[in-house]
Length: 245
Image (tube, rainbow, N blue to C red; front, side, top):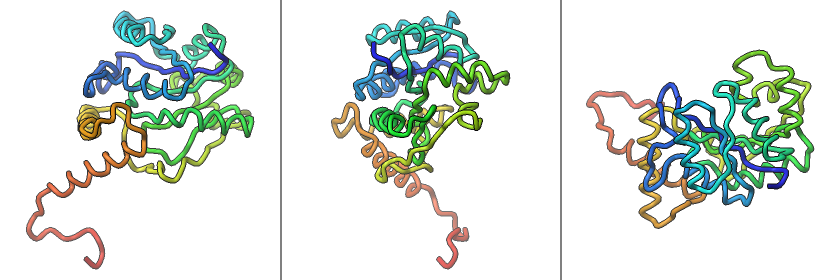
């Protein structure tokens, strides 16, 4: 394995929607959608899960997909990332999470290229739909963060200290114009989120696109939202929210 890989964090014990990472969206689980989209970058994918017995299912699913697996702490996800980096000889990781089944695989190469140009500890693209961005972070920065972080929040959220602390260089890259939709939610935290992503994927699958790019995903999501708004009943006497209409 090279010095850079995507490390995809995943666990079954979600508080709001337990087991969601293996929930089906069309023919694949959320985990498989993430792996397939991220593998389009050409960089290897490592699934990083916990040692909890319930996460045996994640390891089995990842092995079936042909990707490497690392198992570490459940809540101290920062140490899990460092352990994965050590196990596979990485100097940089692309951080992705398995509750984002429509992650932008193209963002991996863009983020790496930007980080290489600016030599930052951490880079993330801004302006993408919620749940589609990845982060690039050096393992050296993760090590320094682990030595400094004593708040459980920072150890669970991996890069939060790096992104806010002036001792690190953390930069935000501007996403390509066609992909800038920061108000569009494409992550899965709740059952409603999962239902929406399933409907969007169903629309995309009908076009024959097995792994649609983010441009197509945004168009399908926008169309689905417009149709949902059009179906909402108009209540007689209800005032229009737009001034002057």
